Image (cartoon, rainbow, N blue to C red; front, side, top):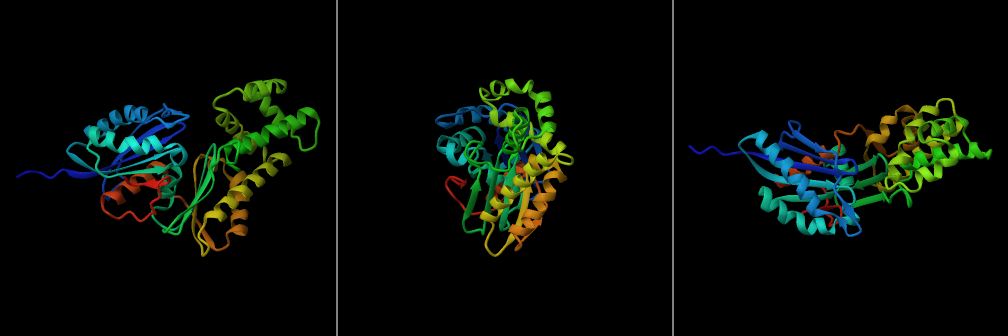
Length: 322
């Protein structure tokens, strides 16, 4: 008798820190096999490089399929940073490439904010704030998506790691100059991390990873917040920005709000004022613990796609099913 292969799904999370891949059985995505690369997929002026994505993704996916044994790939979902604005070539080329290389017939391409949403709330209505180096909020009533911020460190990402780090360095330089609003504590930590304050512009401005460099200083701001009024004020303002973004995207009649991303590992110095802001700005919503991360969210979407149960709204830039 011919044995029917078990149905499994593939989830992919592509971001600034590299590429993560997971393979899991349909209906039991908690039992996932995972692989990771620390090399980010290249992005140029024309967008995310689909060739580089395939070059990294396919070998990892094949390795996971080999570990799983006799399985059939029933669906796949890929979440990528920059998908909404830089994903045209990826949307055009990746479905055919993954069909040829892995036999993928059902594929969802998503912005990383969408996989963060699915990882945190599944397919329930509400809002999710994903914050690390940057900050974006996504919400849905399951009919349409609403987005707030996520515009990068020069135009937004208010309250994210780079924003907090930049505000902390501003307070450090104010102390160096003797201007109001300065923090001697942050000045000392800035010089410890980056070198003499007079050299700071030359060490920060030319960096191609400037947002990450700024975000690296955010934990130092949190360290100082207990005793340093300037640091505590920065985190209060960050909390207000984060809550404003959540309020902008949450369904008007309420829903669940979840926080996900590395920024919230800063703990109580940020979470304390954030709870206060969310209570004030979103009294109609319920703040819940995120179920999982964006890689888990990619598996949620892939599993729903494989079983014809995808309930999140489709959108060409945010959640696209070719």
